[in-house]
Length: 414
View 1: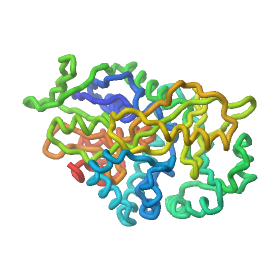
View 2: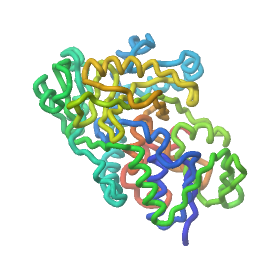
View 3: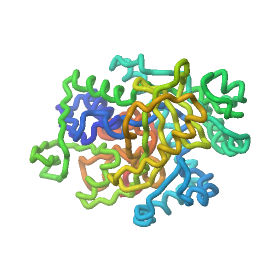
View 4: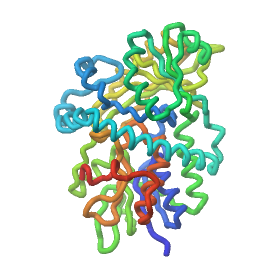
């Protein structure tokens, strides 16, 4: 029998879940207020990187905390009123940086990332967008030997997990990226990472594949979900309704508000970020994404220009933009690379949905039969959407999961 499933949220995670449930024979309706891939999944650096196993709340966070709380770095800003309201989340986030908890997180994220990488290669081919894929890694840059020494913990973890890294001197950095200014005595080349030249277009291609296979995409603002007999009822702000045995919530940062409507408290905070596209001066270019660790920006070569992305801003999900970090990182990026004119009048802003342990919620909501979570992926939802879908598909169909689902169980917070 065909199974009716409604998926709320059409970012990378939701679209991948739709494809996976469709592959398993379900009748799937995918609902979002915007077209697929135009929110958080649009604005990232486009990386599929195993180095993402070291989240922001790792054991080095406590040492960096005094500097971060100064609220004046390009890497991290916060709005005081928001942070005071989210003190419980902040203390839990800090507590999860302890060594033994971090070790669990690193193992869990590595399993999810590796599962996701293989699934992405399959879907990129099936969607006809392998031309967007680069397989030349990405590059961490250090403006001093002291800065490079500060990466020792991360490098130790990378080597422990068998991630392919290579330490570079100034000449090695220049050989990989000839357009960079000679500011970087050290670099770390993460060689087994991949990237794409347009993350939003990749999500759109996956969504088009879902539609071509008979899937249904609806543009609507979902305002409530409620149990109605054996089914769930999903209601939009224009009074349209859908019924299904199963509902998957993959709304990223907006999942928190939808669950609050059900009386469920999700301990999620919002690591907002900004980006802007720039032209390169004549003859200059980048071959791969770079991360200027001291200046706190990532710059990625994209189809629409060089994408300059900021660090973290802790603030309410839909608070007005305050792109001061964008101005700071632009100045630093111009020191490092011959940037040309800005190609956007105003910076783009996105929201990274972060749970206290930096792991997503993937699985069943306790006590709510037929309601499923696929959200909370912090900085790596674009890269781990495929693995999330594969794991959730197995859980929803009572099969042996491809990786251990325990670290991602919603019951740890709900």
